[in-house]
Length: 249
Image (cartoon, rainbow, N blue to C red; front, side):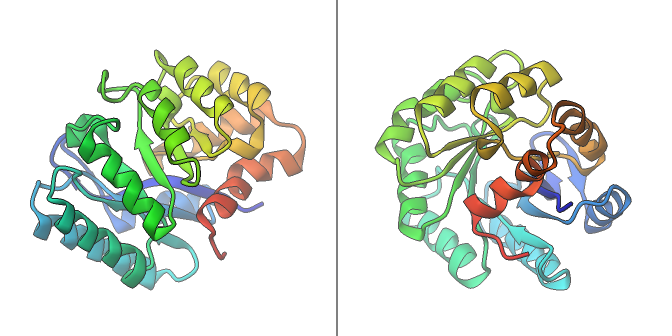
């Protein structure tokens, strides 16, 4: 059964003092049978040259492991629109990345703000999904901030990372139920919230993820405990991601 982790990190995070290396990703993915992953940067220093450098590192990792890994751009929305567009276009059109990420807690951005909404404009133009960190970092990271955006950009797939966390799960579930273009990525969510998401929106709108490769067996256990039907299980573990991100495995 194919397994795609839609939320993996590479590099050093200057906000949370965390690090993920190429060796770390390969070790845990090989150990637990993960087919591949969508890899995004940890939060770099807020300079465009640092942002571009970690994107280049991800691109090389993908090239070294063809057909197994895909990149996701993470660019501070407070860069000028010209700089933001230039790097986003480079990532998608030149490096072959498959999505864009917003991290409100680290980028200090409200998705509903002018700079936040520009990310969705860019994603629409480049025809890629947007993943938004939610949960820790409220009020900006409250999933309810995506309610109007989801309708205004109903042609842009939106992935609610962490499904709002424990305290804001209901908001994430509400936004996903109300909008066909909104999906949940429930890493770190309780098994009861994952169970509720499966019941309310179904496996077609849920994507497997770990956030940290060491977390893979924990996240896998939730779905293998809750889902008995193999087709539904594979839909969560890889099918939704393949469809939304248009992946070729």
